[in-house]
Length: 301
Image 1 (cartoon, one colour):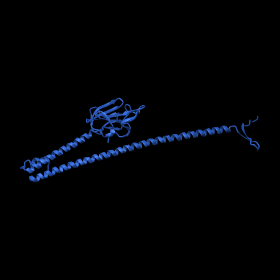
Image 2 (tube, one colour):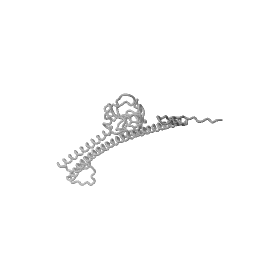
Image 3 (cartoon, rainbow, N blue to C red):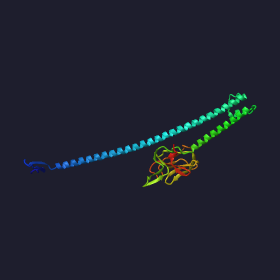
Image 4 (cartoon, rainbow, N blue to C red):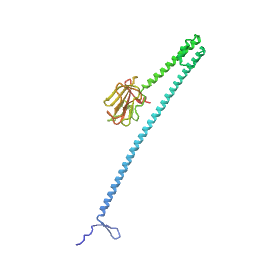
């Protein structure tokens, strides 16, 4: 039985002058070369796609890190502003304390003069009022009466001054200038792009984003006038600060206060969440002055 010869392809080269050259190759070689070329192109395509995907992934990570860095810079600037404000308040309190000390020194000086005139010796120095009472038993003179009147005026002046400071401090406790939560400021007050559709809408507060369960605190002292579910806002707390200011805390995952509760500035009132009409875990925070929304960033320190 004769063996069938392998099929081969013949390639002929016909030059102008030289003799014809003839080459023969196996018939399977072009197929192998085509498959090899296709395989190389496929692997190259996969490599390019993988390289492109890696580039896009790195680009997204870079953008995320850049956004985080910018957020940290913003938060750091806020902290610096808070530190400056606290330092300024501390300086003011030191000035007030120095002023009180000065008035006390004036009263003490008057006491000593009265003791010297009356010939009194009281090592215990039990207090301004007790000394004044003891002086009433001493024979009155014009100079003593003048000093007593001056001492009483200084006492009244000091008392009024301290009451004024206490009233100012009490009022400051009712001003909503404390940041209600830690996080990234993701949306400001005013017109913005509608996150749920086309066009723009008015944003009546600010959004502070952070993980679910983040603490939310009262921005100022006041009374809770609403604690429950509010359409669009989800679980919501509203506090009346009884000085024209009201604050609203929305999209909470959990509410920790009830209507009628009195809260102090910095008290824990809720946990951050994404209830209601929300795109993610964050706090929607509003400040109203005389029932009109105002920019919280104009007050927050």
